[in-house]
Image (cartoon, rainbow, N blue to C red):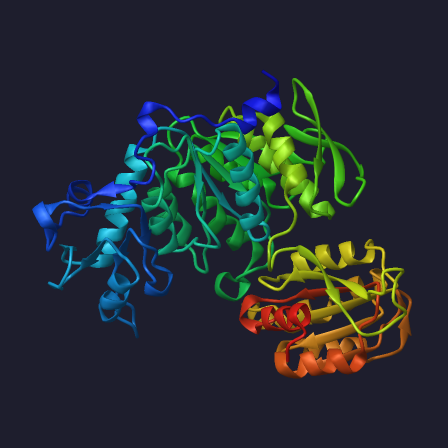
Length: 497
């Protein structure tokens, strides 16, 4: 049987007859130290776990969590109406439920039970930039090689609620688990990694995200290095050798008893980039030295940062004895995700139509996150993108504290280097960049692009429409998620105001 057939043919065996049962009532009650009520015979099964009643699917277990301003118990009836099989609550309700003293603690306990029953290696991912993309790449690689038996945290479920929720959703049959961990303050990843207990811990890169809370990049590196504290005995730390904080990260990993695997361009990297050339249709053809072998594969997502991310993926896959060939196939198939590099064609009104009578422009959606490092990387990629005009819609970068004005103003250089034809700046923090761009029409670095500065996304939509998008434009949209540039992406994609 050829390799492709083995990958595509996923037969079920007798042990997989009940694929959709994630937990039964008894297992949940034992895990969360609760009591089953309201269920005929005290029995039920669930196929999923949810904390938002709006997202409940038939068969889910709904946790009624309590926050500072919201109490999930108010939405128990909605959860049942949407088909929840049972709920976890701290007070009796009508319908199948498990009664506990604290629903958040119960979620953490169920996550711990899922981790305890895991039969395969677990990978934890953190970093200032690229952790969600790397997590998705690792998952795609392992899911392909395991014929669908890999599990990962969805979206950016990487905090004190998202991590135990993602663990609780992991099926007992999973052969691999991939979990993302994020933080705003020191000590947060330490708590998360002790829940995940990874066999492999990956740090993508260190950048001044959250510097407002932590004060320095060194402190950020230390906070990210907390991921090594939860490593299982004999675990592996995958870290970026080209980072100025490499020695710090390596020291932190060794202190936790980890085996260090480095990745990057440096000559002594364990997973070393040898060569990269543009691939047909976009992306990059990559050649990597892994010590005892060389591997060549395609990365569909464009950009040098994606090439470097792929090295971390290959290092992690090898550390859990995954299939490097399947990983290469997965990377070749993966484009950008919505908000994180997705490239879509949109209809525009300006310019001459093509032979089919259409006017299309390229929209690059990076609207979910932004920090100084990722801004520079995506602007550089915009500069390499073929286009009649390059337009950058840049939203404010959050959590930079007193460093914010300098970091925003410093974006003038990569804007010029990218040959941006028009820059639209969104948010109050972008005033520093507007001032820098407005100092003069040109500098030693090159011509400054025309620009506009809007305080809100709504005004930015109208300003961009007044500017007029044309056929074969390339429009980069990037900013911190709280700026709300996803609404601008939606407006451009659907031509809605």
